[in-house]
Image (cartoon, rainbow, N blue to C red; front, top):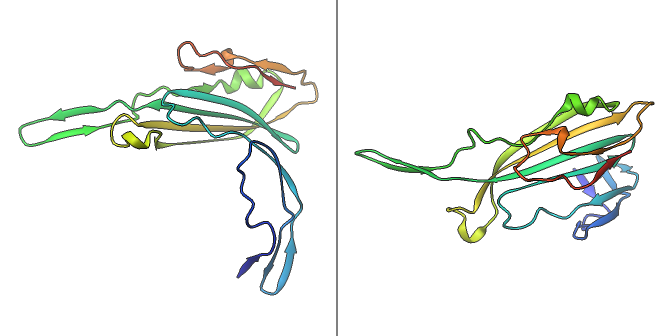
Length: 174
């Protein structure tokens, strides 16, 4: 049985830096404690925004993380035949933005791991069954800098399938 002695009520409800810990807990009568860690809390994605992309950089220890989140509004399709009527959505054929990893690594960066997850989300609770749903994808790229890394500005050219007219906000990797 694990009992959390301190910090169990800390909730990240403000944007910005947040120190968490140290935590102390007991497992089988043995006490353990952790170090403190500083988290950089980012704002949540905007409510009710059905089409959008958010790209940000986070740093932790000797690694950096490029985080790409995107929502694409669902389009409902309907079909019917003699015996049934169907209404559905599908993520098939959606073009989510993707980092061009080869071009990114040409800047003397090494992507050591990447992770992608996608799902359906309701962004408009008042229209949960209608047009208030979206397809959502998050991709996280963990990377490190080679000794001869000089720094650069991340621009649209490092991505494929960006939404039409999207202009990447200034992200400097140094």
